[in-house]
Amino acid sequence: MTTRYDIAIIGGGIVGMATAMALTQRSRASLIVLEAEDRFAAHQTGNNSGVIHSGIYYKPGSLKARNCIQGREALYRFCEQYDIPHERCGKIIVATLPDELPRLEALYQRGLENGLTEIRKLGPEEIKEYEPHSTGLAAIYVPYTGIVDYTQVTQKYAELAQVQGATLQTRARLIGVKQTGNVIILETTAGTYETRHLINCAGLHSDRVARMCGLKPELQIIPFRGEYYDIVPERRYLVKNLIYPVPDPRFPFLGVHFTRRVNGSVEAGPNAVLAFKREGYRMTDVSLRDVADYLFFPGFWRMGLKYWKTGFGEFYRSLSKRAFVRALQRLLPELQETDVERGGAGVRAQALNRNGALLDDFAILETPNMIHVLNAPSPAATASISIGQTIAETALRTFDIPAREVS
Image (tube, rainbow, N blue to C red; front, side):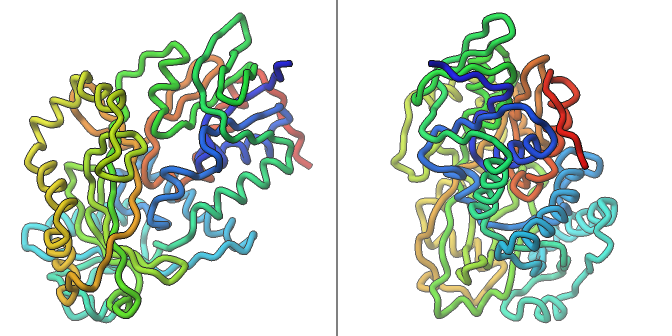
């Protein structure tokens, strides 16, 4: 017998669970979360470096900027309320080359425009007050940045949504969508579900889910693998908190950096290597379907022709530990190859448009009975509470669902 719901959320990562939590708090609609894997937070959420971002990088007024800044403080409050280990430790963004200094100044001004009034410019000697083993020409100290385990955060979101009545279903990969009148029929590997409304938070597969639903988004998800090295325990003292380079404004990636995690370990990375599978955590992971998807997308070739040298450089660093460490030594000259060992990897779902441009902002597409989150890379985890509340507000405004009375 098929169960019918008011809302089905596709994807049990941090954005999907934050949306479920917000909807169950604000609506009496029956809701199910369908997750393809055997656990929640299995992909982007569970394989990132656990940074709570400040919002300094993002264009003022953009969805990323607004949601990151609101979501950051909401996340800190949430972690305090539910005793989730976290730390507001701050970070430094370091310019190591003269041509980075104007970009560092522009980043400082952007931070001020985004309301980060406590950021501070640092000279070469002041850098060492925050990171004694780092060197550079200048830096910005960003006290708003923090660290947390996003898998724990997602688990708490899921717990709260379930307490409010949400149904959570794992091992339910979406394989087909049919619409009959006002009913959406979802065929999954766990059975068939019916819903009146759908919210697509499928991350790496969000574009495919949208196409299953009959939409034609003018973008393609391109998977980029980010590989990390771990600093060996006896050399972790080289990094106090977080050390970042000045990012290249052409790309929505932040460059290889150092991150202390809440468990005490220190990660170095990630790079940004084109993956050959949407869940391609290793170089040897290959899906012909996934590769064909982007090879037949015109935007991929436009991007490739423009940035092929950068792409080859990333692949070289992926294959060569020496080259990876050389990039890290710009920020931390004392680091040696023996100080790091291969760590984990994550895959970023990066939307690319037909013109070959990597989308730099969140992208959310609305239809009368659906909401599709088509681009939500970093800082989506930081912004998850804000994003979830935004989606819930949109659903309450556009879906035929009952609101919950607030006492």
